[in-house]
Length: 159
Image: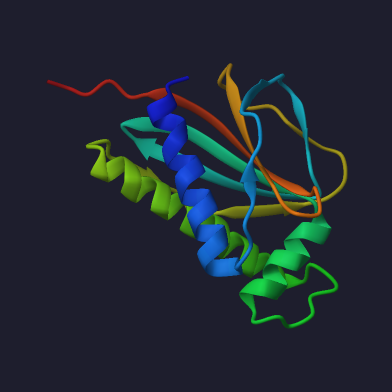
């Protein structure tokens, strides 16, 4: 997987989380995941279309999702991941991928994203149809993390 396709996700996710939630995650070791893989309690799925096609799965534990939602809502306590908190997490992920798309556009690569889908539950198993899943872990102060899992293929440009 090309570094120029991974770096926009890293840059956008760290910037958006810092600006929107006031949190400062550090980049963990990027690696290839085995398929199928387990998802955390909260999974946000966003599709990629255009010159790069595929999907992005953003996975995090419910406790971290509540913490981030709380920060996004001005510090209001978020003890449970209710519909408002899920909406906040979906919007955060939408902003991350929107910023990622802008970075790609600045690098002359045109991509679009689909609206986010939020899934919650225990022991979710994720089996993308593509063969390679790159995982970008973002680690927070309390050692909790967000995993951004990217599966893609390049769409050959006509002409």
